[in-house]
Length: 409
Image (tube, rainbow, N blue to C red; front, side):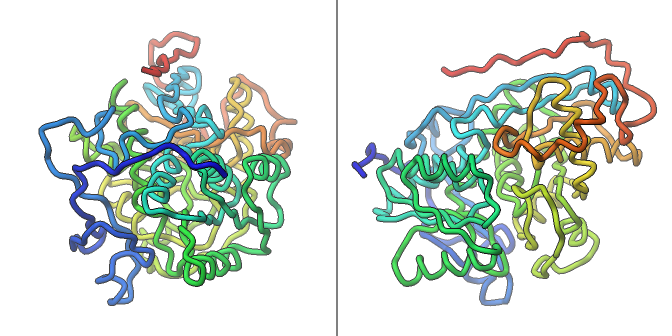
């Protein structure tokens, strides 16, 4: 591959701090997480620490480690209001953050822009990632942009559109039967060959490299630029997105929305109820983008600090939400549709507080076309979903969706 563009880390980056114990550390790669917590038998990711410089942190309102990171045009995704659906679930305003409008079709591009920039800055000669689809495709694309060879360890059941796209970017695909086998493969690549790890590969799970998670802060900044929501609901596996949202809203200093994690079976929900986050939480799901048996401290911390909660979403419920979104013209992947399903569950259980909710629709549905077929056959656009609240909100809103215009400047 040819060399990519030159990049440089911001001079404002002064160190790193543990999300659990708040111990400060020099800037480095901490693949086992916080050394102090690791010595105590815990697994905790770190966050980046910036100086309070008078000069601008970069092109946006939140600090980034690589303000001029190599880019494929990620970010500035649309925020669309859907008043009909807001009325159905009983909330004053419902907005959809369309993260599938990023270059490779998911929110992962925001992470990859910073993460691959970090790899390039460190002189990496190979990037490795374990992924069920979206993350691997994104890393492959940005690695190609940087001119760094990439290897993606994935599952045997990876949908063919992902395989073709990842291979098209020149990345090597290696398939395994389960996620633990993928992680062991990454561990060998990192420890024996010096590859740069773009994803978690350790147990207990820690999360993605903190440099990558910083990219998700821009989602919070874009939401707040339009209107600060009361609730933000996002699909969740190991909590990279949740952590980035929490860091972003915290940095903006304009209030903290309640963060809600949509998960395919009880993991975070069990931890918030008292289970040890280092345990294994088994479950089967068709929501492959948010599957997995692990929980991270960063996810727990983001929910606790925002007074949030986790909502388990069964596949059947996710399929109903998938069909409901599709009926309004939004083709989300099944895992992304779990955000709407979680909102409906909160409404049905009388736990829906706040006036404005944002659903982070993380991925596009075209790459797994069979996901919503069972629900789609029974779909009626104007039928209130089974999980919706009995009393629709009196919004006085226009009957048509409104779109907050994308700003590419």
